[in-house]
Length: 309
Image 1 (tube, rainbow, N blue to C red):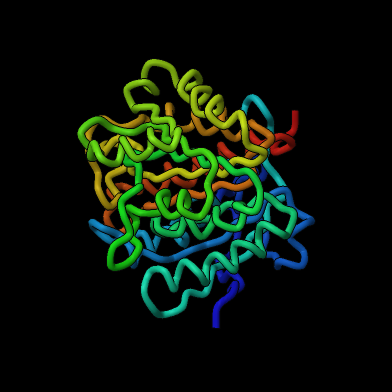
Image 2 (cartoon, rainbow, N blue to C red):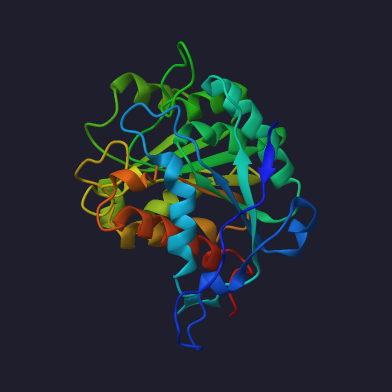
């Protein structure tokens, strides 16, 4: 049986200073029926059965929750984040990757219908097509912050490298990748994206100007009504995020990543966000988990109405 399992995580801010409001103080367990009472809701997806390289992302949701609980809610530009619910964790079926994708898509559809901004805590990148798939009933663009394009062909089964090809084949209107790294993508896959009108903004371009890089992606989304936003933690440089399936040099700094995320998330067409490929068992000093948790905080603070003015 699939669906959502109530969270067993106890949301408590660990600080003993009464002035330190943390996410652990403002996030509370909720249900789909009550989700519309929150500005945003968290959903855990503990799955890494489709990873091409090193596994460990199944442990991501629990670790991200724990790290986020200790993050303070205040952003200097927008004030504190509040009113966040936790819907719990997707119950995953046995079976091949596409079986898991179908089950997760059914849950994601219910979450999107709940009238609260969903934040999916992955889990591997294969579930992106399940998380964004229910939005294909209207015009949709996806912006992926990622070192890779993830448009490999589906052969024996889907993988963490196939989600955007799957979305294109299902009717995705526009795709943009921000943070793509030189020498990480085959020419055939770059050609595939270009032939479909996709936009690729390199990590080098982000380094030259994060806001301009984000704006290039948003300009590519000019013809769509809704945007889905994805962060693959391997977009970060290996020094900032060692706990990923394929850490390599030349990636984004955490500050660049957060700036890009805030610019993208401020667009009122953004209707969902995910953070994927955070693999705590492969991490060092909690760097990747901390970056993933703060990415969630930055997105929530940047959303229209997400923080006090």
